[in-house]
Every structure is written in structure tokens, then in C-alpha cells.
Length: 487
Image 1 (spheres, one colour):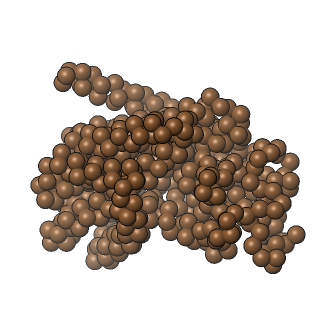
Image 2 (cartoon, helix red, strand yellow):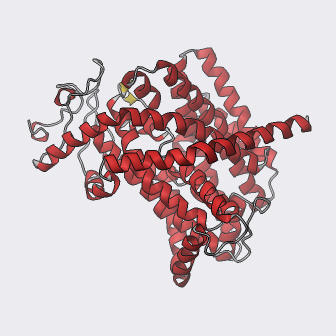
Image 3 (cartoon, helix red, strand yellow):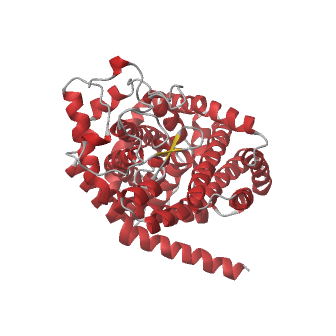
């Protein structure tokens, strides 16, 4: 059994290294540059519009109720982004890749903000109505409806189901288990069983209040985490500039912490950056499609801004705190993940920081597990809408919550990287193929802005042919008040 497990682990490592080193890093750079150059760097050029779009009016849903506003959508997505990847993922990137990994996370964010704009805009264009009169969509939808690539769309939906319903669930439960082992000495199996029970109560429909409480608390906890990290930076303000200099020098080999650090920094920076901001992976479009907005570009701008917030602000702040840790060690054999962040926080808060982080990570990771499940369930429904299949899938999710808690930290993160690579490679190629539509949408949005109007999109206003069942007709949910229209 042990030999078989070792063979499996070796195979995962081999496939992961092959995809990232030979394909994905280059693809992320090329695709990011393509989106940036062809859009004339929309992620920088329209930065002011991104902020102004946060104040745009809410659209009306089909049932007459108000949809969520752009600002609400941004705050919700920002709160969800602060979690395992920002707290534990940054630590893993620094330990394995050195301080320079943070610099390459910045590069992923700067290029990824453009990528996020394109994929979120496409998700809005090809969204569909759900049974509750809301919207759903994502890569599987724009692959099948936009490119008529049903086979690729279904393959992507299968990968999304596995990645978010199994692999990412294991990653979150592993982080929770290790956090409580580090802070309180709780056995990882016990933690896994407890989390699995809570997850089971929610996804089998018996305890929706738990999910409601978790999602209500997460934005508050996210704000508290930012306050906590900001307080540390203020108390150690004189160390911020030296830490930033260390990051840049290490990124280019001017100040290596171990041999071969440049390559390790690039790989780990790209891996942790992608997991953190999800730009190009195809997960964020599932959430972007659900928003009720007047123009698809509006949601593209919101998601692009979210990438900056996630990586440039939150991940950088966490990285500086970790680099202040005097006992920090580097290399594949050094402690990784949440334990490193807890130790760094302990040093700053007189031995209580690790406990505080354990509480944070429980709520962040638990709510993320629920979010991951609903992403997976949405894609499973795209493949097959069957109650028996859904029941079996829910049972698998609960079981994998326990499995993830007891697996080694390095294996779980490697599995996450591997499946991220599968998703990103497929999604990026499909978004590139659909990019001409986004260019036309940008022109339509900007033309209305230049006329002093609040942009509203109609399918008839562009030459690109959309499916007949698109959600952008003349009389639809966007009709709010007469003064909202400038036509």
C-alpha cells in the first residue's frame, strides 16, 4: 500500500512539474500579454473606471427584486478571496521559492487582472437563467454557447467538479487540520471528522444556518485579518522597505537564500499567485456570471479590481509579516503552509498569533469548502442533473474532507497545482478564441461612457453573433427606471 502511494505521489509530482515548467507558466505569460496588449492594457488604463463602477446602480432581477450591486459583489468576492491561499499559500511560496516568489505573484496579478477582465466579461455574455430566476454561467457555458465546443465544455465541467469538489476541498480541510494541530495539538483526523460532519450537515440540506452564519462572519473576519496585518506593519514600519527590497533582489538572484532560487521563485510565485487570485483558471467566471449588471464589461472590471486587491495588497502584506519571522527557514524540507504563518504571527503577538490565525482559518476555509462545493455542484449539474448522482457526489465530498485532513501538506498542495494547471490551460485557450467579442464589448461600453451615459448592453448593438437565447434583449431585467436609460 505504501509503495503504491509513493508511486502515486511521484506521478503527481512528475505531471505537475511537466505542466507548469513546460506549458503553463509560458501560457500564463503569453495569454496575459496578449490580453494586455490587444486591449491596450485595460487593467491599467481603466483603473479609474474600475473604482467608479463600484458605485453603479443595482439592476432589477426578473422577479422584481434588486440584484446585488457592483460594490456588494466586490466586497463579497474580496472577502472570499482572503483565505487559505493568502494566509497559508503565501507562506508555502516563500518557504519553497524564497522571498522572490512574492515578486512573481505580483507579475501574475498584473497580467492576471487583464485575463480576469476577459473571462468575467465572457461569463456575463453567455450566462443563463436558473430555476430561481437568477443567473448561472462560467467557462463551460461560453465554451459550448460561444464556441460550440460541447466536448471541451463538458471536459472542463468534469475537471471543475473534481478540482473544486474533491481536490480543493482536501486542501481546505488540510489547512484547518494543520492549523489546529499547530495551535492546540488537535489530532488531524479528529479535525477532519469534525469539519466533515459540519460540511455534510450543510450540503445535505440539514443545517443551512451553519452556512449562513459562516458566510455572514467571513467578511467581518476578512476585515479583522486586514486590520491585524496592518497593525503589524505599522508597528514594524521601518522593516517594510527592506523586506520589499529583499523580495525584488531575490526574484532576480541578486540575493539568493538557497541554490536555484530563481527558478523556484518563478514556479512557486506563479502557482501560489494563480491559486490566490484565480485569474485565468476559470473559477471566478462562475461567480461573475451570477451578478445582475447592465453591461458585461462592468463585471469584468470588478473581477479585475479584485485581483489587485487579493494579490498586490493582501498577499503582499502577509508576505512581509512572514519575512519578518526571525526563525524562517527555506527549502522543500522546511515547514510549510499555515504553520509558518502561525509561527510568524506568534512572534508578533506574544504567542497568541497562532491561535488567532487558527480561528480565522477555520471560518475562511470552511466557507471556502462550501463555496467550492457549490462551484462543483453547478458544473456537475451542467453534465448530469440527477438526484442519485448528486447524493453520491455529496457523500464523496464529505469523505474527501477527512482524507484531505490526514494527507501530507506537500502532496495536497501539489494536487491543487496539478488540477489548476488542467483548468487554466483549457480556459486560457478558449478565452483567447473568444477575445474578439470582448474587444467589441469594450468599444460599446467606452462609447457610451464617452457620451456621458451609464452603459447598458443590447445584443443588437454589436456585430458579433450571440445565441438567440441570450440575456441581453430589449426588454429585460435591467429595465429599472426610465432615467436609467439613455436611448
